[in-house]
Length: 191
Image (cartoon, rainbow, N blue to C red):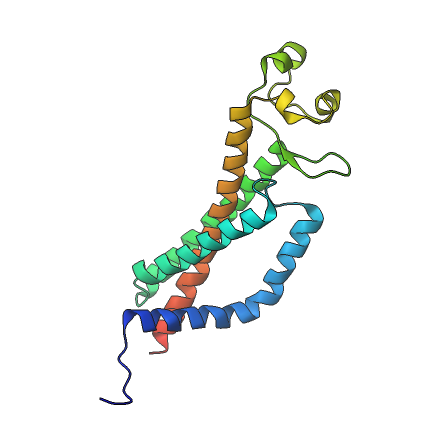
């Protein structure tokens, strides 16, 4: 038995990861542009910070790849096609939802970092801007020196931050599912 390697589930997973890296090598040039574009136009959620957001997103993508490997029966073309199609549609819908939420909930004062608006006005903001609450914008923000905590309640700001982050991560999970299912199926076909 010397020199003979025994195939295990883990060795199969390593092969799967190798295949994903291979696919990533031709996807990477395009994907590498994404963070640059995102940083220029500030499309990422303002909370948590970029390092925290990147770490959480990468962890979510990694666990998605592991789950796809473990749970998907990649030998059945119909199952893979449904998975890829559903993941693409869900990812596209989540992208639209994310950008709509971003447009409504994120503000960036000139020369400053971006902040997240809240979903419920404070009692003071309700007295001054009841007709516009909670969808306050630049004029109201200027009146409080861009201090979001004076216009929206803390819980509503935290909820808005978390929703933005979760939709962002879910969008990446959907696209990772699509890529993972594709690679898993193609690797199975090679055997």
